[in-house]
Length: 392
Image (cartoon, rainbow, N blue to C red; front, side):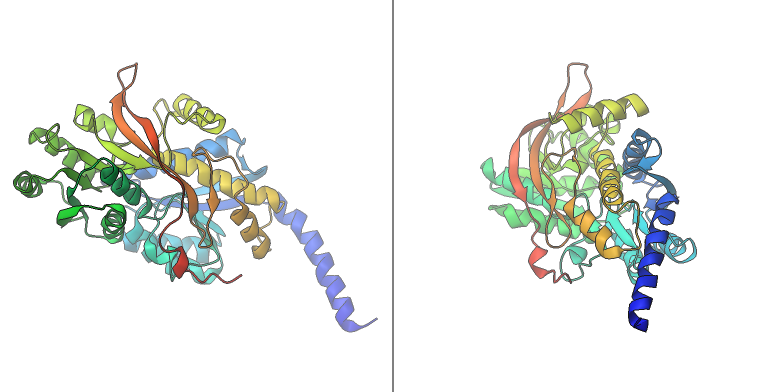
């Protein structure tokens, strides 16, 4: 028999034997997220949503046992990079997720990418990785950074508000935020303000807003930054005078307890809503509240969907990650019931999905929540997909 044929048969038999053995091993997932500092609530919610899906699966995703290794990046890019390097090089972890902030993501990805590991983003969606730096092993199960800001720009325009004051922190996601808002806002930007990522006092910005007398204020300030801004906006007497708009993650369950009534009346955009009446979402909201004694946030919904996405790929490949082409193809199919409704991946491995308009209100129990008030986009794709030249 030809030696090449013998070698091919031997390789095939080796793979056949190895695949069941690999399927019996626990699938290790590295979950790097922000669990300390001003963004701690965001990472905690993403982690809890992810782990809820694991718990519902009896410690399994897609029917296969998983071991989730959680690490705190502290919102420090260098820490995120070091943790990612340890996970992929020393621990040989093949699937990673969890990063909340884009500056951490951009620091960690260069050490993940050369190893062949898969990264499925639970939140951070920098424009670079959606466009020219897209990669076959990088997926985003949440959004591209601009998306919710684009939808908010459309909402402000549709409401006939022509003069907007806009502000965000001076880091990649902040710059993407204001770029996204301006892409769909058809009025005049009276001021475009970039703040520090560690800023907590917005007295100067609020004085400038009062002097500019805009028709609308749009801001993106994550976690504790947004809490401080909204409370100071209210204390300055501007709530009720100037309509306040933001992305969904600036107005959600992770920040409402601290914002209190200061958030009421704000309009925001998100790809998920607490009161979205799909069977998958109703089950998720009820299960999350039962498990954690609080309502889920948008970050929790993304963590949950990310876990289900990974599970769908494991189920499709019989738990194997060695055939990277097969695992990648299974991720692309996104064969799971997303809590947000319709969901599919675009050519750059970023979502094409609906985006909803929400208003901050009090529910029948007196809790501050978002109420869905409409659909802004039915199937929205990010603006950078055309720059992606993804290898097949």
